[in-house]
Amino acid sequence: MTVIIDGKAIAKDIRLELKEEINQLKQEGVTPGLAVILVGEDQASQTYVRNKDKACAEVGIHSEIYRYPAELTEAELLSKVDELNKDDNIHGILVQLPLPSHISEDKVIDAISPLKDVDGFHPVNVGKMSIGKDAYYSCTPYGIIKMLEKENISLEGKHVVVVGRSNIVGKPAALLSLKESATVTVCHSKTKDLSSFTRQADVVIAAVGKAKFLKADDFKPGAIVIDVGMNRDEEGKLCGDVDFESAKEVAGRITPVPGGVGPMTITMLLFNTVKSAKLHAAKAVF
Ligand code: NAP
Image (cartoon, rainbow, N blue to C red; front, side, top):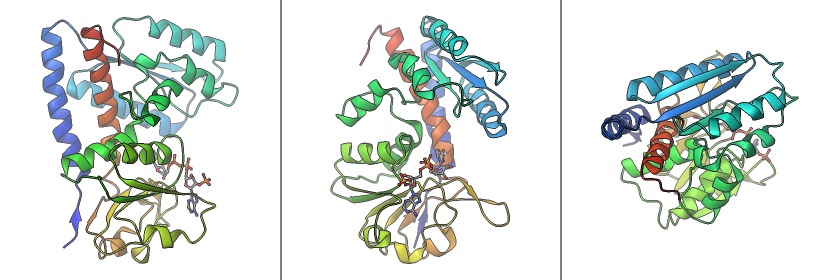
């Protein structure tokens, strides 16, 4: 029988563990702090930032939100990042993407101290991840690895097929799977005969951004199906990159959308912020 992986419950457990760690840190005089910068009026970004703020409050992380109009200059934004880099009460800095087109996202990400880059987007953290070192890992793929760990699923020796090669999901999901000793195949829009790859997979990580793109026929019976997609179907309902209803008849385990990978993403942001605060308290770096 197919097991539905309950990302919401796993995320809740991790947040409870974090809450205890945060209480401990507070007793030692350290309150983990996250600064979030939002530029412009993008509705989705506003919602993400609100959710991050709420999640911080729930576990006891101090959060500061800096909201700026879309006209903010690149220099002004870089100056704010610099100020937060030097602020001892702030352990994590997150600049909500996308930024208005007159601001270079690369420049802004590069300006965040790698030691406070809790989104895991800085080239130093990406580089460390790619050579298998400890670092801040991108929250969504790291959430997938944690979720599998909590489900007692080892990736060692498994064939993981990642569909998608974006810098924030596909590529880091592939690198982190490799770190777990999986055999990894990465597919993308130029891949020929995609399903010949996905059908060989013990684990499929779907990060395509197309509603219900992968169907039952694309999976090997018993495969573990991790659906990262967040799309709207024809009726405007939230759905993943996997056609859940058909795929669940074939998969051994599968994540739903909503309630699968999604809740893990913010949880790993909290996790990375606490990790940074702990390193700061211990005056250590990795
Ligand atoms: P993205 O940057 O648009 O990347 C999509 C990837 O899919 C690209 O690498 C693209 O290939 C590949 N692709 C597109 N069409 C394909 C096809 N026909 N066959 C095979 N591969 C194809 O998207 P993303 O940022 O990685 O996000 C992917 C999905 O995850 C989206 O639905 C997004 O909303 C969701 N997401 C969810 C969370 C969460 O917390 N749950 C977080 C982040 C993203 P090319 O590189 O060749 O163009």
